[in-house]
Image 1 (cartoon, rainbow, N blue to C red):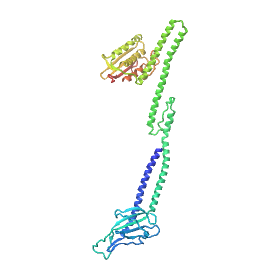
Image 2 (image 1 turned 90 degrees about the vertical axis):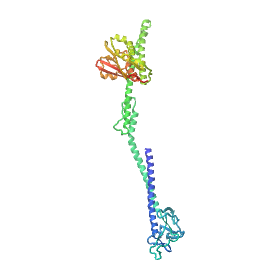
Image 3 (image 1 turned 180 degrees about the horizontal axis):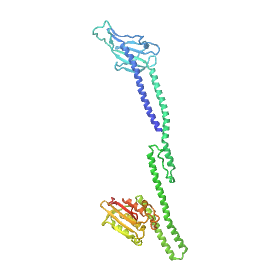
Image 4 (image 1 turned 60 degrees about the horizontal axis):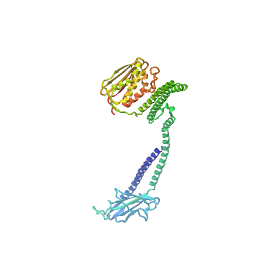
Length: 468
C-alpha cells in the first residue's frame, strides 16, 4: 500500500509539474502574442518621410499608454540612439533597449518604471514610406539610419496571478487526490489481501492432527487459486504421508509385540526352572530364533529406508540371470519341498544383464520366497522370462486362494497381509516392499497382476543394459 501511494505521488507530481510547465508556457505565449500585437500596431503607425521618421500616434486609440492607473509603456529609438517617441506614462524614464526582428522579436521580464512586474517585447524594424507625402520622390533614397527600434512593455500581474492560481489548484488538487487515493488504495488493498489473511489463518491452524483441512477455492481470487491448489495438493500428500507413517508405526508395534511377548515368556520359563539345563538351553535356542526374526525385521526396515532415500550402493557388472535365479531357488528348495510346491523354470539360456548382482538377487529371492510362503500346500510356482536386445520381463507366478484385483495395489505396502491368503507369520511383511524399492533404484519396474483369478503374477521389467 505504501509503495502504491509513493509511486502514485511521484507520478502525480511529475504529471503536475508537466501540466504546470505546459500551462505556463501557453499563458506566457498568449500574453506575448497580445504584447506583440500592441507592438505591431505601433509599427504600422510609424512612417518614413523625406525628412525623417514619424509616429502617427493618437491617444484616443491607445489610451493604455496615457492613463495614470496601471499604464502600459513604449519607447522608440532611431538607429542613432536618439529617442524618436515615447509614451507619456514613461515621463522622464526609459525602457531597456533590447530588440529582435519582426519575425523573431525578443521578450523578457522586467520591472516597470512604477515598480510593477512587467514583460517587454523588443523589435527592430524599417518603417514604411508615407504614400501621401506630397514631397515623396518617385524613387526616394533611404535616409541614413532608417531602422527604428521599438520596446513595448505592460504589467504581468494578471499573468502572475493566473500562474499562482494554477500552482495552488494543482497543489491543492494533487493533495486532495493523494488523500483520496490513499483511502482508496487502503480499502482496495485490504479487500484484495483479505483472502491472504484467510490463507494465513488456515495455515496457522494446520497441524499434524488437522491435515485434512483444505483451503477454500471458491472464495479465493483468481490470482491466489493456483497457490491454494498447490497448497491443497501439498496437504493431501502430507496427510497421506502421515497416515502411512501412523500405519507403519502401528504395524511395527504390532510386529514387535508378538516376538517381545515370546521373549518374555521364554525368559520367565527359564527363570522359573533354573535347575533344568535342558530347558534353559531350549529356551535360549528359542530366544535366539526370535531375536533373529526381530533382527530380520529391523534389517528389512533399514533396507527399505535406504532404498527410499536412494542411498543403496549400486555396483554394476554382467550378471548371469539364469544362474542367479537357480541359486535363489536352491536356497528355498527345502521349504518348497516341505509344502509340496511344484516349480517350473522357463528362462532363456545365456541370459546376462548389466546390473548389481546383490540387489537383483535380493529382488528375486524376495519374489520366490513370497511365492513359496503364500502359495497353498501343493501349489505351483512358475518362473519365466522374456528378453530381447532392448527389454526384459521376468515374471514369478504362484497359486493364490483369495486375492482380488482390489488387493493388488496393497501387495507392496509395508506389513500388509490379507486375513486368509496372507496370514503367514514367518515373514515380516517387508519383502515385496523392499523388492519394489530396490527395483526402482536399479531402474526397473515391479508390478503385480492377476492373469487368472487363481494365480498372482509379479513382473520385473527393465532395459537389458542399464547405464551406470
